[in-house]
Image 1 (cartoon, one colour):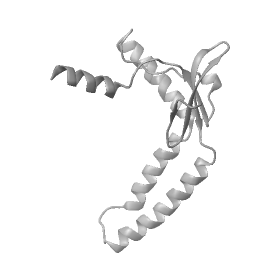
Image 2 (image 1 turned 30 degrees about the vertical axis):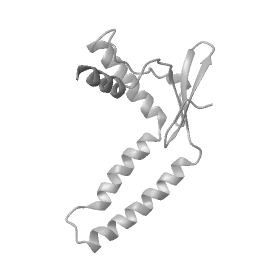
Image 3 (image 1 turned 90 degrees about the vertical axis):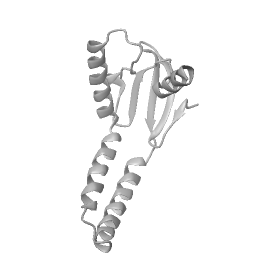
Length: 136
């Protein structure tokens, strides 16, 4: 059973020999071609909307930039590399901090499967909201 789900995939909690507890994020099958089709349609419509409403904004370029970032999100190896960079930087800034991020397991990660260590905790916005309520 997945422990979390999002628009791009689902997350499972597993125990792997040699790695212990891990989170495995699996990309939804067929999501890449569907997103590419959606971006193509959005780009086509954006050019029409820009012309129809005589906008002074380059809507197709905005869609292209958005699309490039969204397609980057579909490559879990990039996400793993960014997470590893963040973890290294966080370790140097504040060792043993209360705020952490899950370290990726790079050797098990592919473009459509992201494996990270399992981190027990709660989302920062939940902690901040509770702290705010207690302060009031």
